[in-house]
Image 1 (cartoon, rainbow, N blue to C red):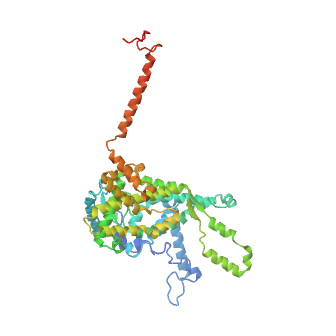
Image 2: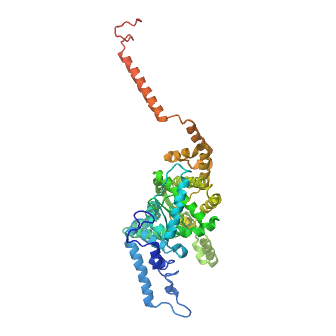
Image 3: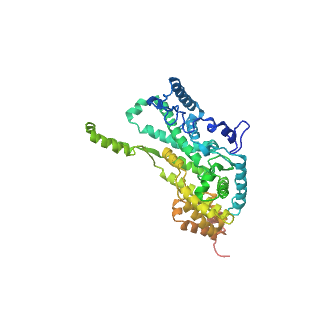
Amino acid sequence: MSNFGFGFHGPDDESDDDRDRDGNNGGHGNNNDPFGFGSNPFGFLFGGQPGGGQGGQQGPGLGDILGQFGAMLSGFGKDMNSPDAQGPVNYALAGRIARQQITGAAARGTTVNDSQAVAESVRLAELWLDEATVLPAGATASVSFSPERWLEETMPTWKRIIDPLADKLGDAALAGLPEEAKAQLGPMKGIISQVNGMNFGMQLGKALGELSKEVVTSTQWGIPLAQGTVAAVATGRLDALADKLGAERRETLIYLAAREAATLRLFQHVPWLVERLILDVGEFASGLALDNSAMEEAMRSFDPESMNDPAKMQEMMQSLQSSDLAPKIVSSTEHARTRLGTSLSLVEGWVDVVVADALSSRLPATNSIGTAWSMYRDTQQPGMKLLADTVGIDLDAPKASLAADLWSRLTTAVGKERRDAVWNHPDFLPVDSDLDSPAEFIDSILAETDSAGFDPISEIEKLERSLNQGDDDSGSDDDKDDNGDNNGDGDDTDR
């Protein structure tokens, strides 16, 4: 893994082009099958032909079967013994499954021309952004990235996000066991934890695999998942995304570069923002639990006598098949998820406004691209849905359009300098209700701007001096004599 973020490799690292020449997506074997068996890893047990037998040919021989089984065990063994297998999630398995989903055009490596195109677009976008925000440039370099490189660069941040969620859900799964079963677990708890880790690893791998095929910039979901300050764009997705946005490839690249550069400006100059988002995830995780009410209700409705009636038995089986009996992920700290969604929406909305201001007069298609992008973003992508199903939370920005409206109206009311100053402290930011009804929040900023000459720190200091002076005056009464005069001679006659 690069020590310096996207695009910077050590002398022993393979380039994306090298991995392409190796074939099979960097030597990972069948891209659609995590374990190398095709769609049915145990098909040979049921007369299948995982070896691809044709016509009347028989299935694989015993040697092939044992070889495939050994390969599966070898893969599991590496995943189990990897340092990334320790903890609530087996990240070695997650990474392997994610990479093996990257196929076709998505697996194409990047070229020097791709990175040059990104660099030119970022430089152009930075010049235009200087006029749209007071926050200075945050990107120190730029690069084109492939899905596999994105997985590698973002895994440390994914661990910070996923670990507390998976850890709490693992505890919740054990807590849901009957007391008798808990008492009998004993030394089995370690094995169960490993099984849970592999289960999370497999599900997370599927989610990250989908996300790696959907990602177009390193900050696409309102948070810099990749470490470092490199502006990164997935040029392999440009043609498909340009079709979705109804724009030319070059226009799409400039728009994405501007979004990436604007987001990096925000996160580089608002240092508390990333940690706040991570803390929101952790707080949400602290209240996680599993709701097994659907399964419990199904068990209560089970009638043992139906076992003797085939018609009732079939009816019951059909009812069970049409029901979702899986445990539901719930949290007693739902407010943390709301706050996370609000923060992500504020980031995305601010970027919408700043990019529109920067590009509108230079790129005629900006407004139509921005509208199409909002529609694309508001449609939950398969990868985020898988992530939410796995750990109960995603990185979607549910009120990004409302946040963009608030930032736009605030810019009109007080200007870009005062607008960007709202990011100076988390307590200054709008809350969820402000996105639905922004008038009161905007009025409060206007009021502060109108009283710009009022210095609260100076006023507090004046008040403290006044109070101290009052204490001194009251203390002088001690010097008066019992008759109330100030000269101590007992005569209070005016002189």
